[in-house]
Length: 188
Ligand code: M6P
Ligand code: ZN
Image (cartoon, rainbow, N blue to C red):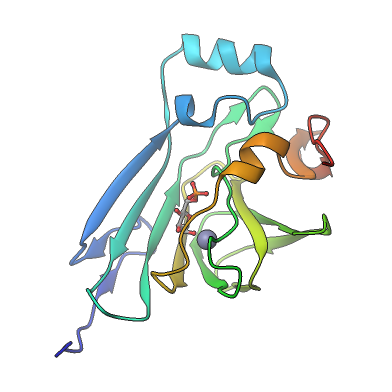
C-alpha cells in the first residue's frame, strides 16, 4: 500500500526532501537548439555549464509524481537558457507547472504548430494541456525554480523539438526579454 507523505520543497533552491532522483542538464545536451551556433561554440569554449537540474519525488505504482526544475541564469548569445523541450509520449497526458522563485517564460506549442507563451512569475500555476510541447526559459538574473506534477506514464518525446525546434524563442532585447519567432524553426 502506498502511504501518504509530506514532501518538503524549497522554492528558492529547488531542493526536494526526500527526493528519489536528481539529474543535471548541461549546455552540451542542448547542442543545435539555440539560434546562434557561433555563440553556442563560444559558450562551450568557456565550459560545459549546468543549465538546469531536476529533482523528483516518485513512488512505484502511483498515478502522479512531482518534483522541481531549477534553471540557472545565463544566455547563449542573446538567447536565454532553456530546457530541451518535449511532447509527452502519451498524447492524452498534460502537466502542471507552478512557479516558485525567479522569472521564467513557458513556451508551448500544439501538434499543429500553434504557439503560446506564459509568463511564469512566482505564484503562477500553468496548465499544460495534453499534446502541447513545452519548454521553459529562465529570463531572470537568478535561479528560476518551478514545481511540476505529471503522470509517470506520460514519458518524454524529444525527437520533434530536437529536429524542428520551437516556433518561439526568447532573446534579450534592450535589456529585457522578448518573445520572438525562432529563426531556426522548421515548420515540417
Ligand atoms: C520539467 C518536467 C520534467 C522535464 C524537465 C526538463 O521538470 O516537465 O519532466 O524532464 O522539465 O525538461 P526537458 O525534459 O525538456 O529537458
Ligand atoms: Zn512534460
